[in-house]
Every structure is written in structure tokens, then in C-alpha cells.
Length: 277
Image (tube, rainbow, N blue to C red; front, side, top):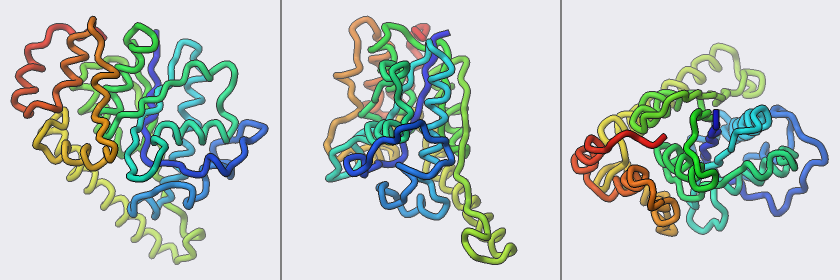
């Protein structure tokens, strides 16, 4: 099989210029580059469970999968989503991998950066397009590394809409700090932990899965489209000019869906012939 490994990004690491690469490959749980909250641009909800530590674990897992399969290609996916920041999410994740000693002579040419994606649907769609652009093939198997609470979103929504087969999801984190770390009694920790995960799953449903169930592609006029615009300060769009290929009309159609209303996009989607992947 020809394998696509997708590493969706969730933030921007901004300390690469001031950090030195490790001389050895670090372990996923080892301290070092990427493990300082201050080195990431984090949203308020990403602090409580130390999401940045999960980012580091995601990076390690993606490279572990890459190293285990010589036919695999790793796509790190995330655009220029932060206003005033000159590095993309994907390039910043790559720098964490570099600083932690994960990039080698054996894998460096099998790593691609998607610097356009603005949400999870685009993470998957554009990674397929980039895989095709670099290899001339479509992946026969897809492995996705991300947060466990996003498993349903990727497998039951995005992958099914794209009619992907042989998709595997590796869910890691977030890992809520233990009571000793927070220096609170066990009963208080249990209450806080439950509240955290209840809020997390509520937000995932309200602001992601419910919306993607109503609009598979994040079409113009939708809340999902508005979110994409807010995550695109450079107004680069979804990279349609970069990813479109003359020989792939179905791929090109997917890249154009966001400029249609969902009923228009759905009608076109239903008229498409067999997918080339």
C-alpha cells in the first residue's frame, strides 16, 4: 500500500529560531523543545490540559509511523492562521520535529507541508491533494494522528464524505494533569477533570461535528466558512491554484465546493463519477 500519514496542526510553535536541535532523538515524554507553553501561541482552552504536550506526542507518533513504513509519506497540515505570525502551523510543527531530532536522512524527503488548511476537513482534503502532487498517486491507506476527541469528526464525517477506505486514526490526548501536579485534593481533581472533558465534548459537538453534519465542505455563507476566513489573515484561501490538477476534475471540484452554497455543492457532489482515490 501507498500510505498517507496526516498530522493535523492545532497551534504555532514560535521558538524555533532560539532553540538548538538535540544531538539525539528525544522520546515522546522527554522534556525539551516544544514542552514550554510560552513557546506556543495557544487559545485559552488549550492551557488547562497542557495541549502543547499532546502536540509533541502527535509529532512523535507521526514520525514513528513514517519510520515504520518506507512507502509512507507524512503530510503536516496547517496554514498561516495567526495574524502577524510569519510561520505556518505546519512549518512550526516541522521545526519541533527537527529540534527533537526526529528528522533523518532516511525520512526527510518523505515529509510534505500543507500550508493552506484552515480546518480539519481541509487538513484531510488538502493532504490528499498534496500527496498526489508530490507522488503522482493517491494514497491507498490513510493514517491520521490527532486528539482522541476528534476521532468521530475525522472518521465518521470527513473520511466518509471523501469516500476514503483503509483509514486508521491514532488518538492521543489531551491528558488532564493529575491531582498532585495541580496540588488539589483528589475529589476536587475528579470534579474539575469531569467538567473539563464535559466542556470539551460539548464544544466539539456544538462548534464542529454538528456544523460539519449540516455542511460537509464548509461552504460559503456557513459558520464553518466564517471560521476559515477568520483563520486566514493573509487571505490565501484553500490553495486551489496550487493544488488543482488538469487531470483530476473530481479533486478540482472538491477544491471549489467552498465557493458554492451547500445545496449547490451537494448537488455537484452527487453527480461526480467514481473517485480517483
